[in-house]
Structure formats: C-alpha cells, structure tokens
Length: 415
Ligand SMILES: [Zn+2]
Ligand SMILES: [Zn+2]
Image (cartoon, rainbow, N blue to C red; front, top):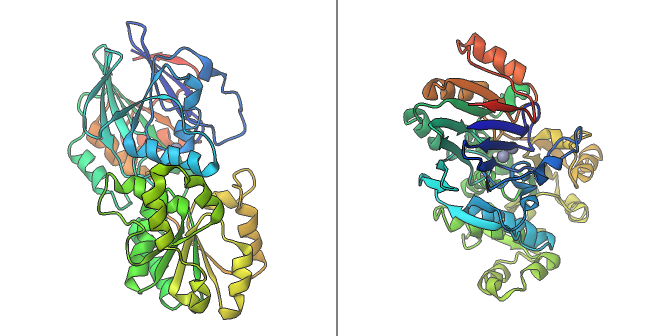
C-alpha cells in the first residue's frame, strides 16, 4: 500500500490522505476545505479516486467532498451526513448529491473489495467523529481524524487506550494543539462550571457564542441553565442539529425539553417548508420564545453564532449583558475571521457587553497524543493536521519515540 497526504502535513485542516493498494485501487480519507489561504491550490481533488471516507462533519474534513462527483462512493456516518445536510438546508443550498454509503461505529466494512476499514467513534467537538484502522496488502494504518480526551464523550478516548488497535504500521495523528494552549479551561466540565458561575448571578440576559453543531458545548450550557433554573434559547438551525444528533443519542437534549425554547427566525422557518419537516415545524412553533426575553431577561441564556446587535441594544437598560465567547479565539483575529467576528469585536470594544472567553479545544493535547501513541505502539508515526510537525516530532522523541517521520504534502510513501 502507498500513502500520500495531499494536504495537512504542515497545516491545520484541509485533510486529504490517499491510499493506493497494490491492485491500483485508490481510497481517500477526508476531502477537507483548507482553513488556511496560504495555498489555495486544490487541483488534486480532480485526481483519480475510487472511494472516499469522511471522518467527521467539519468543513476542513468534508468541504470538498462533492468534487469527486456522484459516481465515487462516499462512506460517511449517519449523524455526519445529517449535520452536513442541515448546514446546506439552512444556507438555502441543495443537499449534497454524492453517492453516500452509511457506515456504523465499531462495525468493520470493506471498501472496493480491497480496504478493510474499522471505524472508532472518538471524542471531539463534533458530535460524531471517527478514527479508522485501514488494512490492505497486509499493512495496517491508523488515522486519528480529529480527537480529544476532554469532552463529554471522553470515555471513547479511554476505551481506545484500553483496547487499542494492534499491529499498526503507520499512525497518522492529528497535532493541532502543538502550538495552542488549553490551560485555563482544560475540559468541557470546566467550561460548564465557568458558564454556570456566570449565569448564576446574572442581572440581564447571557449570550453564549459558539457553533450550533458543537453539541458538547450546547450540553455544557444546558447543564449550566438547569443548575440555575435558566431557560436556553436556540435558533431553528440549532434545534434541527439537535434532532439529527438525537436520532443516534437519545439522552441528548431536544427542543421538547422544558428548559429549551426557540428563537423563531422567519428566514430560518422558511427553510423548512418541505413536508418532511412538518412535525418539527409544529414543535418549533410551540416552543417559540416570542418577546418573553424582555419580561425577565436574566432568566434567559442565548446560545448562538452571531448575537443580534439590535436585541442587545434593546436589552441594555436591564443591566449588564454577558457575552461568553465559547469557541476558538483565533476566529477574532485577522486571517481567521468568520462572518460575525467583526460584530462581536464591536460589541466587546463598545462596552455594550461584558466579554468573557470560556472555551476548551476540540483537539488532543500532546499528552493525549503521547498516551495514544504508547497504547497503539505503531511502527511509524506521521503528524497531520498540524502547523508544527517538527515540534511534535521533538516532543515525541523526548518522550522516547524515535519513529516519528515528517512528510511532505503530495509526496507518495511506501508502507
Ligand atoms: Zn479538523
Ligand atoms: Zn474537527
């Protein structure tokens, strides 16, 4: 088997790994949209490929998947496909038209009669994220995808440490955190505690800015709300993301929970006009918060991506408004800004809100990676999804692992 990393040996995101078996069959792992603008060339997406596997529904892993066309089978998890479709629906775009084949966690499947694939469910900021063992031609590769050990699903990580895959020739491990720190809030539990402390004595509404698909974070906020008898307001897109995830994880919150209500935005409601949403639509309308927030704003916590300036201004006379920024702080810096970064920066600098950064990463710390390397004990380790593979190599070498190799994008290696 030959292995090539098209992107990701020296950058975070845009992952695409190519495996070529001795019989010539070509399998790709992830086909992400690059997060960095340094190298916009994605012409490799037109290369020949026979099948694609998507690890999880983050843009930097699936964003270019439709480039393979509608004939190539795309293996994907049920929640991942549901969340990717949700994004499209609420952006008013057509659902992805790929040739999807669903796989289940912990259930081996064979791709192209050549690659034996075993998917491990992992702890990550996405509610469904997989790592894979892939076997062909007598060689075994472990691809970590994105993972961590500090979320509400961290038992998945510890399960993997206890029952690691055996006889791994190559471990492609993510290394996002080599250059980032997670010290202030090391776990999802610590995020829950910090948000809980804030909303406890709030005299006005609290806004928590995060991703609608970061269900672990939403759970942290729901827990905090439940601790202090607050009500959580989410938008219709977020409500639908919960529906999708709830299909597989019945313990997770939905809009039917007493503490959860919905901000019924007309533009979002218009996105779910298809009859298949009719039951969901009725339930949304039933949980519509309307103008209740103005009657007793301190009772409410808003979970959203982009706070509404006019709403915040209307609430200002009721006391200090807290804005908890609960996602990667780099999104507020030039080069990584998202569509509402400027609005949030403006709210902060204008003093309209009391700004607080409370976030824990979706990615593994170096210690998490080291523990996994020890458990798997692979013949070779290659960092991916990292800006600093050299630092990761240095770190692992100091810890006694002399088998770390740094690869180049686009170069083929024989396994
Ligand atoms: Zn990623
Ligand atoms: Zn991810």
